[in-house]
Image 1 (cartoon, one colour):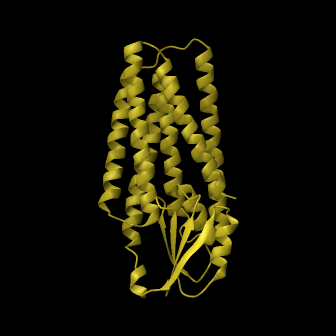
Image 2 (cartoon, rainbow, N blue to C red):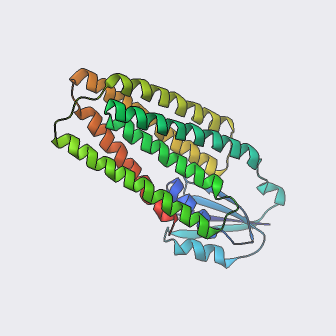
Image 3 (tube, rainbow, N blue to C red):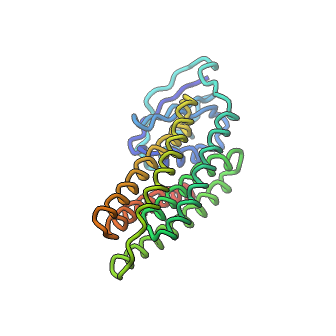
Length: 265
């Protein structure tokens, strides 16, 4: 068994990881991939010399370079139970999608763009988790199709949200209900904290599990931002804190949608 390490200069988030996974999909010699996003390192365990691995990595234009290739014992690339990982990801997916429905509904009722934007961020995460689960064993074509559909849907909703924020900035609009904003955001914060705890308890070193932790950690920050916006609405008796936070979160969702679309190329 061979173990090759690659330095990938432009790999700095889970989206690049997913693009690399899809690019290397189908190479029979590959037995396992390990990603270290912090250090921009990819480790590939493969059964034989294969120049196609580096060739495909270079085609992504992420600055991929082969660092080392060594022989290793086959026991080194044993993986943890996929069933355990799947159950954890399903739990996180359902919690995120459930709060998408809750936050979207209460956001419209309370006239809070911060809650609406946060709900779309929850939906975006549900797409990411769903792609990871549903694409297992699927063809590359299906994976790309799902990524494109998810990305376009998410991008459309986010752009509509930005247009609505601009309209509310320009026109007279009633102040959002800060009580609903704070209450629902606190519940969403607790839900995301539970998701993060579940993922951390798994102690998984698998890259897609680490990616899930990154997404959930970002959600905790966004939830805190919406809570802050609710407090500022209360203190200032103004709609603007909610619109500003909503704008920021919508832009985060747009960025996520663009990265999902890149997976479909």
